[in-house]
Image 1 (cartoon, rainbow, N blue to C red):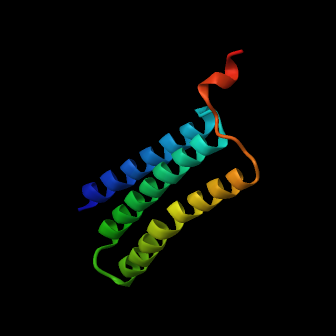
Image 2: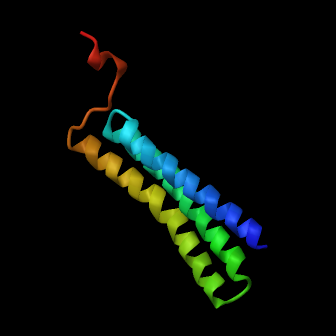
Image 3: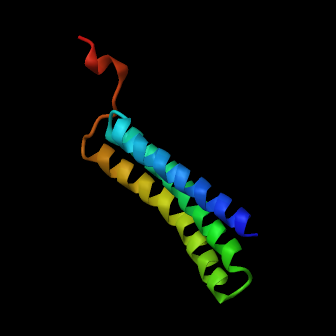
Length: 101
């Protein structure tokens, strides 16, 4: 079971790392938020699954499950709210034509 837990933790770390690279490499706010919203949510959920497997059936695993459910709802919602607020404030999405001219 320890190897399975380590697998989930490493997979979660990988997705968090990919999201971080996305924030550094992508061209605008909206694409960066997409990378963060998808990768960080999946990475944190995989890490929490790994921690639940490592801990076994206990009260700590139940608390981690509650955190898992909260993150599953809160992260995509927060990403959506930030992007809508940026659109309403006048931030325009990046297009390929901006750099050409």
